[in-house]
Length: 359
Image 1: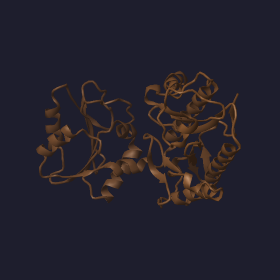
Image 2: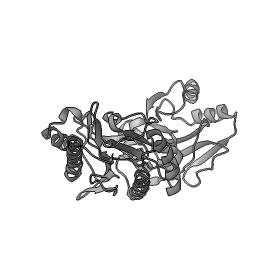
Image 3: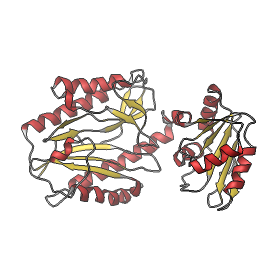
Image 4: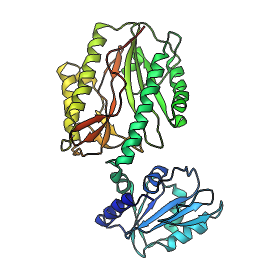
């Protein structure tokens, strides 16, 4: 059990007037308990109260949590019995926060068994403690990004005239497995030429042409902690305009990283990146936010956008990924993950970002 994390959760529960919380999502269970199991369709629930007491309901296929939580086991088909026990353990007339990803079948059954309780969504309650990573999480995020660096470099080095967008996208799963990530859970967006004009293109069975930009946005988790990085390279040649676009995006990426420090707002970092691109005349072609938080989830708080007043704090990890997308021409995005430290930003990705032309 992760007692420090549970203590932060309990404090937040008290501040929000909650009596108990139900944790059911695999990622949330991993964060608070240290388990790395997959529930799939089976019942797996951690009940936490304001004293920090924990009661764990789990199918007999799953390992008990051990010290720190009483485990209640059940077999397939006995979910009703487990839910009845859970209902009896609820604070009479209390307010219960429920993980927002719990299957509705289990939730509806519990609602029927506990009609005099007040149910609330526990989405932000469970996710907000995860915004600032602790030392163990930082190390896992660094490791995840190191794997991503190696995988993307190997993928880029494999590109030839016979490569296709879809083929490269498929092949990356094997590279992630080779380098120790959870390959089946990762993937890549790969686009050539005009297809790069979409921030989130669909990979096709097409081959690159001389002068094409090649955009690769890739990531896979390591021990559940996500990685995410984008690199844009060019095939055989690069036009003067696309070279100018690339250098502008890289300048915006570097300026955003340099601006990161505790106390600044997410909006300010977005404004720094956006300002570089607007000054170059490409402002209308930067069509998305500058970045997103990342950890157990690929996208989580904080979000770096024009409207976010979130104040940066030590331990936050997020992407900085400015881009320029020119219809009928192509596009460039450069993305790194950064961690907020007392002195600024620690960049977790180390794959070079200088303009690169594949011969």
